[in-house]
Each structure stands twice: as C-alpha cells, then as structure tokens.
Image (tube, rainbow, N blue to C red):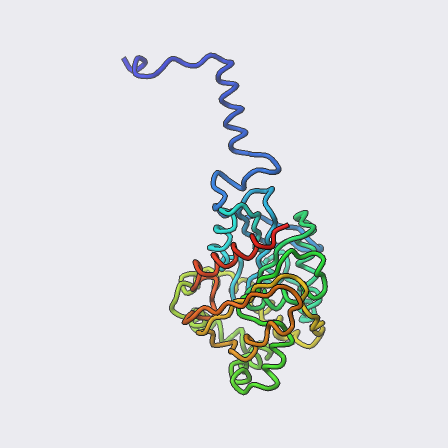
Length: 319
C-alpha cells in the first residue's frame, strides 16, 4: 500500500546525472555565485600579511571587486545592507573585520594600529583575494584608512567612497580652524587614555558603549558589537587606533581617483566645515552627497540611500 504512493526509483544513470547537477548547483565554480542568491551574505576568513581577518562576502566570484572598511566601534556587520545591494548588482563585495576586531588579527602594541600598518592591511587583503584593482569604501575609521590607501596606492583603486570622515587635510583644517569641530572631537582625548575608556565603555553591561549607537537601526546591532568588543583585548585594540594617532602621519596626499563622499547632517562627530572642504583635495571626478537628518551611522541608519549612491558610483567608474 505505502509503496504505491511513491514513484518508481529512477534508473542508475539518471541518479548519477541528478547527483552531478545537485553538486554543481551547490558548489558552483571559481567565477560563480557566493550562493544561490548573490545578495546572500556569507562568512569567510582572509589570511593576509601574517594575520587572519574575519569577513563578510556577497556577490558572484567573478564580479568586479569592492572592499568595504568599517569604523569604530563596529564591525563588518555595519555593511550588511550595502553588501547585499552590491552582490545583487553583480559585484564581489567583501567587508573584513579590521585589525583588532578579528581575533586572528589582534597584535598587542599600540604602534600596530598606526595608519601605516592599517593601510598595508587593505592592500594585503586585496592581494590575498586576487583583487588587482578594486573599488574601496570606508566609514568612520574605515574612511580614514580608505583616504590613506587612495593617497598611497592610487593605481590599485578603481574608485573611492568615503562616508562621514572627509579627506585628512580637510579634517585637519577643521580641527585647526573650526570651534564646532574642535568641540565635536573632544572624545578623542578620552579614548587615548590608557585603561579608563575600556572600563568606562564596558561597565554596567556596556551601557555607555550601547548608548553610542543611538536609537536608530544601528542600535539593532549593538548586541553583536558589544559581544565582539567584549572579547579579550578587542576593545583595547579598537581604541589603539586613537592611541596610535601621530605615530605615523597621514601623507595628506591629494586624491586622484573618482570619489564619492557622503556626509549626514545628524552626525555628532563630524561637522560641516570639513565636509564642505573635502572636495578641495580631490583631483578627480568628485561627488558630494549630504543625507539630511541621519546620524553618524550612515550605512545602517540610511541604508537604502547609501546603497543606491554606492551602486551608482561604482557602476559609473567600473573598469
């Protein structure tokens, strides 16, 4: 009785064929998709420069490459919306957890978090992924690093997108000349202290750290950010970016690759003075976009707007 409810078993040759089809669908090939849906985000590791970086990746393996660099105090998680949008558009988008945020890339010395090694990491990651030329995107500290990569290695970049943080010379001018930006940046002095910021930010179930993310969509990722930064040495490593300021200086080089700069009016850390002067230091096609009313956490709090701008920008300058 039960047996009559099922179709007859296929012949052996058909079974072999079906298994091969299933295997090919599951595995793909070197130029195939990262999954059945190019907007799907997968986790991976990248060994580069003697370190191991955790990363999120989306899009077909043969797509034009895009690297996305996160800021403080976040991780590659902040780029989920943009990874999905880029993958859907056919790009191979990779967002690493940067030095200090990845357990396998957490050296102990403050000097290990100066701009020079942070910049070298980006090139090492690109080399490990086989990205000869690539679009580079950064937010917050990731933007500061991205500007530096553009200044030191312009031949490696197809385009640059910087979110929140302007060109380093524009930011330096703001710090020197604009009382508004000087007031916004006082937190940096606190972060550069030894030990105190770690204790303060993680006290009471990381109440102060959680408060940094505000009440918008970025706050929805707070638990994951706190979990990561509560790992042994992680928050110290992340704060060492600030403590290493001045150990190696920015080149301040003018940017010579096509650039999109995005700033939001609700950003409490970065003011209008530097944002409006950013383009003065770009000797290439330049697009300045202002997102009204959104916080510093643009990739999450203005996810759709930024994703649209980003896909347009990389599409315009794709090789």
